Length: 310
Image (cartoon, rainbow, N blue to C red; front, side):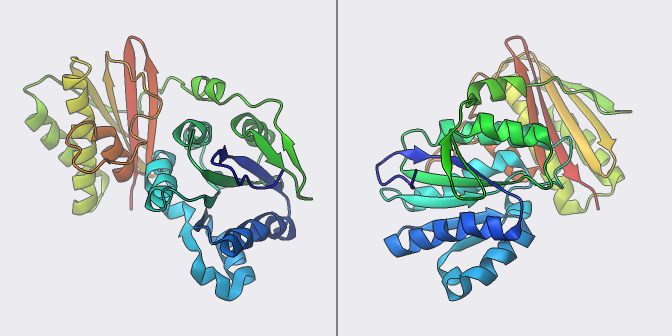
């Protein structure tokens, strides 16, 4: 199946095992966009970014190239900050994007958020005129990641360039299946925040961030993110917020727990609308944190943010 020329959204997974297969699956995709006068962006890890840059030669200057390990370190940032950011600038025309959010270096903590991101692309781009090609390295990714790719992409492309429909496509099940309970950070300090406790919360978080060794500007990001989450708990969930601060290896881990429910699976993943004054809290948190994970039920929600130390 070729890239759609109709005003529809196409979301294939490209399975490759060698650099040659990677280039065979991605270069024609990019060149086809350039020849058609279509905007094209590439957001992939550095090694593959350099591989494409060398193969494209002078044409690379006509492609919006991004290092996914930087712009997509937090998977919750990719839809609003990478995919929609590019597509919205070129509204009204077909855009092509190569996005590789899952690679072998992703941590166990990051992976569930990555899979949910891949599933939610289908909802975020429903009815839009775009094609987003997602490469998967079959030589380095395990069977779980490859099986999840089949469930999150309606179309599959193999190393020979053959397209087929996915018989296991079930993005809603993926989102629900990875909505998993988040364990408390080890040796966490705790603070319960009511509507009058936000000032004390900021002091509590700032001191913890400094003790963990974060630079002042990054400590400010932690304070802002956790304050936004606690404010959401108080205002929208109408619940006290239980804030837990701990560490997991080289990351500061902050959890905010309340008795609310996040019913919208795209909460925090829609770009800000000009003039918007409310509903930006979780989006802001996604842009600030190195990782955001959410577990939500009808009676309780935990939002976890992680910040790299050092």
